[in-house]
Length: 567
Image: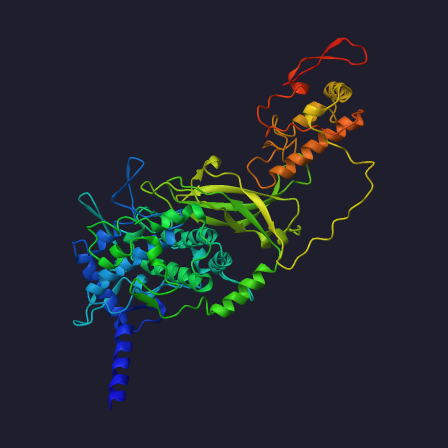
């Protein structure tokens, strides 16, 4: 008998534990009662003017400004930093708890936009719903939100872009699913965060469109209730990442960010203890347990469980690919960045030939916190390069144009110029390096402070000859490679830029070739050695006499000669 009682106690405990969690379900799989519960919970939250009401919680994200940074009143939401997933995880829980107090017994449902879409979820796209008790049609609060600005009440709007309902061929994925897969390929948490945040911006832009009071404006996005369905799915993807990698590898300089409480959840005015007590980002990790009172009914991604995802990710890593690499930062507005792959035109007198590779989006607004990603954003261009019949590691470059949500072109200087990153497949191996013992053609570079007098005079002599050469093989022509007058992509192109690639990964390689170019010219004119190096890492270094002294003594004639210094 005692064994039966013990078993009953265990069963009851298990039931109680299961009831502690609010279960988040797909919005497309809710039954009619759950949908009615959601209608009633949101309507009650909208009518609640307290700190537990919809308007008060919506204000956490952007308008009206409640946080202070750099002496400015700004919105409290964080973007472009490593704790973006954790802040928004707390935010969805905040609204979830408000609904729970209004009688909702499930969690905030998620809208799985990684699956092919043909419409918005019915919960948010129908203007009215049928009330449970009266059977009458009533305005659907999920269809449109309300924003009080001064003495005006403004309703949110949507202008859904047809790109949200993308058609795709056999064996292909939607662009949104591809972006999420790209994010999940990175075990490095900081890189995953960048890729995930940019991916979710796509939903903001394609749902909100050009409307000011919409999902595409950071200041007002949270007033549209679809925001919380969307961010429940963003959090679900982050939860899948946690199942795959745990906390991932977090950059050491970001560790402090994870142990500081985030606003406004840490404020005493927060009416929900669950988010106040867990307001440090590190407290929100769910890979070991669920500290925030919810769990997901389904953690598959587009039908793929963890094992299938790991297999797909491994297959993707094995293939060679090409990416456009962007350094991104805020400019206090939302934007669409259109990406092109370009090659020099066959006719030097015409513009380059470019093909459109796709677009990505930034979410912003006047009240956004300034930000700059610590890691670059990788935009895949593999299919475009292959369509152009170019090798993935071939000679092409990336161009980008920036547009505001209203369609206006934004200045190019808003965005550092992107560059190409070729990523060999994980199974690819470079051919063995061909080595030779022959050294007769090897040029020796010496320390400039240890040159003999004869070597110095020969270097000065050949440099003078090189400077006098006004042809395309002369010093002036080579110097133009680096700066003025811009010679790239072609000397006769209409829009020319400097050829040197400062701030890019190939900086050392480009400048290595530049030195070899000069070296070959000097050797051709009789230099006995290569370009000497100036070791400026030594203490008390100064400009080498080879370049600093306008006069020198010819050791053969024992007379002072003037060295022609240019520049």
